[in-house]
Every structure is written in C-alpha cells, then in structure tokens.
Image (tube, rainbow, N blue to C red; front, side, top):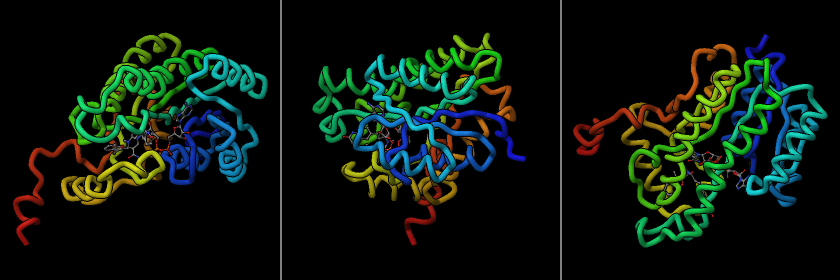
Length: 267
Ligand code: NAD
Ligand code: 0WE
C-alpha cells in the first residue's frame, strides 16, 4: 500500500511532461493519492487533461493565479467534487522574459518586480488560504518549489531570486499560520532541470554544466527525484516537518569549493 493512500491532492503547475509538477503527480499517484489538476489558460487545457487522464483523474480545472476569482472558483468546484483536500502542490513561477537576462539592476522594472512577486510568491499564500478551508481535520500539507537563486545571486535569475526569497518566507509564515490547524507547509529547493521554465533562459546549458561539476553527485537532478521528496513531505511520514526548505540538488548548496576545481579540472 502506498504511503499516500486515501489522500487527495491538487496539483498546480503542469505545462508539459517535463514539468516538475508532472514528476510530483507521478510520485503521488504511485503512492496511492487521488489527483486533481489546474491549468492557467485554454492553451494548456488539453495537455493538462491528457496528463490527468494518464494518472486516472478527470478533475481538471482552470486557475490563472493572478485572478482571485479563478482561485475562488477552483476551490469551490473542488469542494463540490471532493469532501475535503489533503495536499496542495504549488509549482508555479513567472517573471516577464526581459527580467531574466543581463544584470539585475539593468533588467528590473517596477512592473516586472510586481508580476514576478505576485505570480511566484503571493499566489502560494492565495491558494494556501483557499485550500486550508478544505483541509481542516485532515493533516493537510502544502508544498511549493523554489530555487537557490533566493539565497545566492545567480547570473540572469534576477528578480526571480527576490521572488523566491519571498516565497521561502511565505513558507515559514504560512506554516505558522496553519500549524494550529494541523496543516504543514514546506518548500523544495530543486537543482536546475530542463523544463519549459528553463527553456529560452540564456546560458542555461552553461549553468547546468557548472552545476553538474560542482554538485557532489556530479549530475543534474530529475523531476522523479523532486517528485519523490514532494510525495514524502506531503505524507504522514513527514508529520514532524513544517516551515522547512528541503534541498533536492545533489548537494550543490553544501559545497564551498568543488573538488572538481582541485583535481578534476586539471586532468
Ligand atoms: P514549468 O514551465 O513546467 O512550470 C511552471 C508552471 O507555472 C507552468 O505550468 C505554468 O503554466 C505555470 N504558471 C505560470 N504563470 C501562471 C499563472 N499566472 N497561473 C497559473 N499557473 C501559471 O517549469 P518547472 O521548472 O516545472 O517550474 C515549476 C516550479 O519549479 C517553478 O516554481 C520554478 O521556479 C521551480 N523551479 C524550477 C527549477 C528548474 O530548473 N526547472 C529549479 C528550481 C525550482
Ligand atoms: O525558477 C526558474 C525559472 C522561472 C521562470 C522562467 C521563465 C521563462 C519564460 C520564470 N519566468 C519566466 N518567464 C518567461 O518568460 N528556474 C529555477 C529555472 C531557471 O531560470 C533561470 C535559471 C534557472 C535555473 C534564469 C536565469 C538563470 C538560471
């Protein structure tokens, strides 16, 4: 029997079968969870429906996270289909493309800052608020996806780094807000993965190569590896963990000077 048997999970953030949210959905399905999905616009509806179908779900609902109305009706409809919710997966981020190249101070604008923070951080609180109403009395759990660009500067990550720093603080404040209701809130800081959100990022290949050289495991992480940790964090196996950011990055964040530069690079 899977460790999520009997749990019901809503997954926001599938755009393709490369999406981290797809890795999470597969892991949660494998562990016995029943799944529902949201999509932001008609362009992605068909794709998300196909993914849902593959995991035995026919609950696929619209939700552009910039709209309070759409968030409201998502959870209203979900509450009609299910008598409660156990798991919320938030795997959503966006900054206008112009924000993600060049030096931070050259790229950042008032509007880009607002959009990045609204979609990539506030949306977790907005969804979390609405989801919590369906989670009372059920050991609920929420998880979001973040990146080390929140803690350290990274070329081109720019305003997304600030938005992820805000998202990580959001995890801690949401954990405090919901702890009394038995609801846990955590984040996963993933290493770089080739997804739609990474395609079109200038120098992504170079940065992935650097990551592979520096990280102790010597390779990129996969959506399956992130999926397994998300499934664990949202399960009762993790009942003592909340407000935490767990790194799934092959150890990259733990390295000071990589061994590669001392012994590997010279050969
Ligand atoms: P992805 O492009 O597959 O997923 C991003 C999702 O955000 C898409 O499904 C997109 O539809 C959704 N989204 C954007 N704007 C939205 C809106 N207004 N309303 C609703 N949904 C919206 O890419 P991914 O890499 O799987 O990204 C998922 C999460 O993982 C993001 O938070 C990202 O920052 C984070 N992350 C990614 C990496 C990486 O290297 N790929 C590393 C660490 C963290
Ligand atoms: O969080 C992300 C990317 C999120 C993202 C991606 C895009 C591309 C398309 C947010 N907004 C947009 N807007 C678009 O128009 N990652 C962790 C992946 C990523 O993005 C980078 C990275 C890495 C890693 C950008 C610069 C440097 C490294």
